[in-house]
Length: 276
Image 1 (cartoon, rainbow, N blue to C red):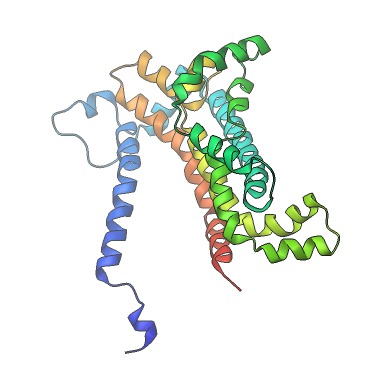
Image 2 (image 1 turned 90 degrees about the horizontal axis):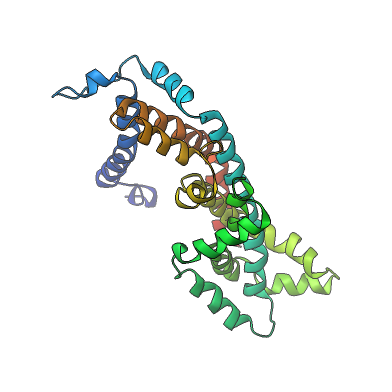
C-alpha cells in the first residue's frame, strides 16, 4: 500500500462532505422554490417540490414594492468599504501588536480583546447621538463609519502575523535601511495576504447581512438589502413567495462573490500554508 493511497479520503469523508453541501444548499433551494410559485400554490396542503415558472414575475414585484436596486447598491457600497477598511486597519494594528515593541502594548491589546465582550446594543444610543450630531443619520456613511475597524479584525491579524512573519525578516529589512512602513509593506503584507482575504470575505458577509444598525440609522427610502427585505415582510406579511423571491435575489451577490474569488481565495490560503 503506497503513501498516496493511505492519505486518500474514504467513503465516510466524501459522504460527510456531500451531506454538508446538500444541507448548506437546501435553504437557498427552498427560498428559490417558494419564490418561483404563486401564493395559491404554496398555501396548498402539499407544498411543491419542484420550482415553478413565476420567479421572474415575483422578482419584478419585489422591485416594484421596495427600492431594491438602491438597497443592493447601498449594501454593496457599505460592505465593500467596511471590509476594505477593516482589513487595512486590522492589518496595520495587528502588525504593530505582533511585531513592534512599545510601552503599554499588552494592556492595550487586552482592552481591544475585552471590547469584543461588550454587546453591540449597549453602544447604540451614544453612537446614534454621535451620528446625529455629525448630520449623518439617514446617510449610508452612518452605516459605514462605525464598522471601519473592528476588534476582531485587529486580534485576528495579530494572531496570524505572530507566526507568519519571522522576526529575522524584519531585522534583515531594518539592516537594509527599510523604514517601519516599508518593512510592513514589503515583509508583512505578502505574508498576510491569505488572512487578509479571509478577513475581507468574512467582514463583507457580516456587513451584508447586518440588520440591526442599518435599521436604526437608515430610512425606508434609503435602505440596505436586509431593510428592504424587512419592508417586504411587513408590507406583505403572508406573501411568502414575494419575501423568499427577495431573499433569493439578496443572496445572489454573495454567491457570485464566492464563485468569482473562490479559486484565488483557496490559492492564497495554500500559498500561505507553505513553509520554508
